[in-house]
Image (tube, rainbow, N blue to C red; front, side, top):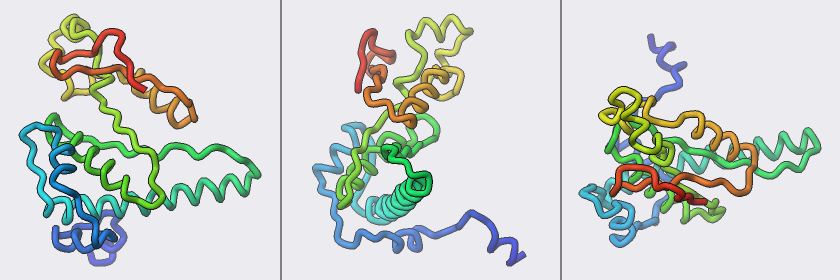
Length: 191
């Protein structure tokens, strides 16, 4: 059994073990930054959580990104190509209201402290919910499943967006979603 466990790609770490893995020993997130990351909602996020959970995660992402950039450069050297660097995409998944947006904002803040700071954009899947709400109503009561189930998303539009992004498209437009109207804003587009 021990041999099989050592071959597993999964690790089980305590919070204390995970917290020790950060390579950000002196990084501090201010209370103002935490308030902005929380988004003004009733979200909880304290400096201890940043130190113990998010800093090690940012360290791991930084290692993955560096390795990906190096692999891309090595491949281009071998192929004698000068392709532009492709975007590094991080996807966050989870149920409605579990903290995906908060995590994305936190990672963006932490990544901004990197010496090789990449441009970081947060794109919410809310932008790819079927517009308008009447489409969900026409599809047999999908309003009750909006945002929490795949059938409420325009998956072809989301896949096209990701494909265009990874293919090097320079100007991508993203539908604008309003949490006040609970719908896509007609004609609203972000870049």
